Image (cartoon, rainbow, N blue to C red; front, side):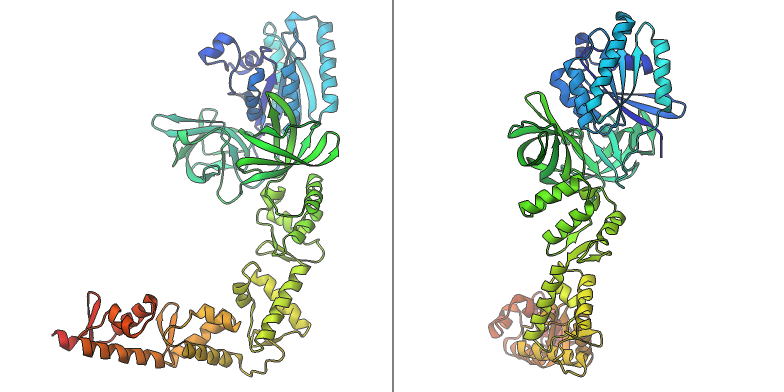
Length: 611
């Protein structure tokens, strides 16, 4: 794993963030004329510092109050927060808000740079350091160190800072097992086309990879990629990467759109969350998640403490979030609170179950969460989305699932079934056998009837019923104890022929017959093959079988029509046999197989008539 660091800078307007970065790496973030004139950073600036054993990526966010939204977009997914405080001004409103946002977003560590130290006394610097230390006492974000910095003594000051950056341990990041990336910029380059920039949040992206723009449902290909202006073969978490995308134009993309491989995420317009520092909240607010900004309706579900509550967020568009993903709620240019996604996938369950589930998810009590969800999904609870839903790999999710009581775990299909579901299916199977005592069942035939139940689970149920002597096993098929048929396969063959004979010229498709008889598809196919081999039944098309007796009758009829009319076509045959086009065309096509029949356009003739 690489050792790079992704650092977000924050602080009040004109406290020296851009000057500090320029002193470290020579990058001037205020590149636009408007920024030069006003002396402030209007949008996010990106730069890097290359050290012997590590690359440091800097995200310089604006300090202007109205541009806090860029702070949220820039600070998402970083390793370290760097808080800039001017010595002569001290702690200011945006200092507090930037620090609050960094804390809400779960950035683990922070360093503080006191700038303009040449303008204050050493006593003033010491007092400010004490005030800064107090700021962090009630926060989760950890203050690592406080460094002085002045443009006058910058050469000496930056040596200590660079030494820290070179040797500080990289905070661990949870590996989701797939690539995630929010677009923060989209533009077009002549000769290259669409290019997007953003920070790699998890996984790895390589040149040639196919990704999905989830917000559009569009698949794109990574034509090439750069890390800090240098072409690379791949990019990893904590790296700033520019991706040249094929298959889409830059005008179609917006800040906040999510890139990831296809099939890993599902989007929902409703999210259940935990909100921190949420004393009083309006009904509507703006959700900032990653680089995405979206309006949401807030519904408080339950208060766990005066400033901690469970809530539901409803938006007008789908959000492709993951478990414990951090976000900010803002309204009227103010940060309301921070939060974490607890349920990125909506479950239609009772409110009492919902509250218990959310509390279990908040405390990461997955065993209890699995128990609630398995009970709430009578047709099986799937673990296929366990990474998005719980931040767990399939292996981790299955390990937890196997500790559940009264639950069957289908490891292959990643589905959990509650004991009550087994009772339900068992009752349905017994009803089938009571209705048709001669039914011959198997896991595959039951799966056709109940597709939500996996064959592995159905086989488990049949085996359990066999142990309880509720059913019998005859040559691999399951029957009623009252079924005294000696040879099940012969019985199936006889019943299929009997049904085909009864249905005459318009027989049902085989799977409908199998379902009617309650028999296994494999056993039914074997019987049809046997009937065809003995020439009792003829296969006209893929799913169309007719008895030879009825086929010979209709062949005789078709020849009589040719003799009387000089030809036969669809309309003439329909006049004699009022069947659907499906059957009529199949019989006419079968007639073409005979050597004395000649087809011309849509009509059939006897060859001797056309000679």
